[in-house]
Image (cartoon, helix red, strand yellow):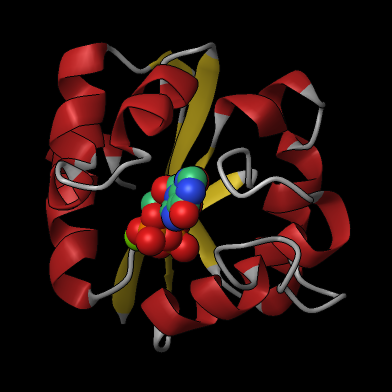
Length: 137
Ligand code: IDP
Ligand code: MG
């Protein structure tokens, strides 16, 4: 069974969407393996988003992701990485289909409610950044 890393970003927590996000992944049939409420530090944010270091939106992204508590989670299931991204919808909520989290709840590209790993390799890296092995049940 595959694992993936998902995180409710600070806008999702501020807007009271944690329950809705968890509900959608549960409803799809993924299994919750770990979850907590944390304040992402700038060091962690820079490491998490290292691949975007050269992008024009990187400073805004780091400042947004550290702007309040986030809820990192680990989910398990068949093809969990792509299933989670399908449930989340396209990166830009303007383009995300209705019925997806970003399609139903967002309109800003930076404040797009959720993060989800884009490959098995990123999932492994991101899970290790946010969770100790004994926190994954
Ligand atoms: P993803 O979250 O769908 O995997 P990425 O391309 O990995 O999308 O981008 C990471 C995050 O950076 C996005 O979720 C979004 O919050 C932000 N982002 C991506 N592209 C832009 C942009 O063009 N302008 C502003 N923020 C962006
Ligand atoms: Mg990404």
